[in-house]
Image (cartoon, rainbow, N blue to C red; front, side, top):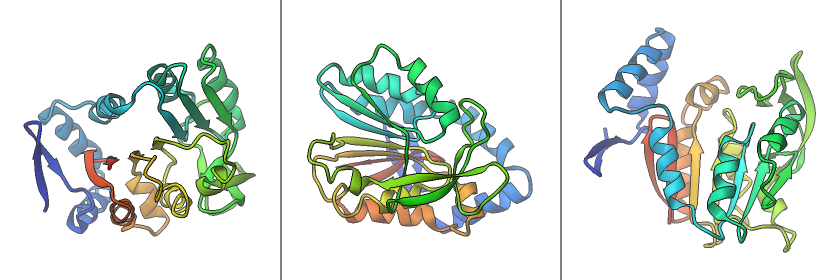
Length: 244
């Protein structure tokens, strides 16, 4: 187990295979939730609190931020205020049932660009799980057709920046319900090698990845980011902060 000490806190490398397996076993036994609550109590941590505060501390005036999986705009509005009039926020949200609410919640922020597409590793069509419930956080790409799945167009981040006039990100936040690997793979050719991108903030959905047969994906994500010069650490058991 790899332990790190920073800011008087004990931080864990959650890509450790033993921890990944233990997490899987705990979920199978139905004790993962209670263990998570104990963790938060012991470390005085509310869900996403550390991730939220550390991420926002890195955002400055003039930054260009991609909010991948913007949902109803909780972070989109924060980003828009933080980057100011000289910055840009690109909000990616493909769920039609959510986009209207996203735009409503973010109204009054002229520095936001709305993209009604999902990011992935290629520009094609994919199935998208859409419950038709506004702001449902479980909406997302899916590998199979299902009763509530619709076909949508997806783009790779590399293809998005092929247009020289498109806002190139200084930071990217990714929350895509188990398709983190595809989003990151779609950045490998143009976006990740470019030093203008200095920060990534990734919510890693262990359970969704495991359901897709990708138990080792958290390790793969960390290794990919490290291969492009990012220093990767975990803000909590579900969130990566990568900087260079």
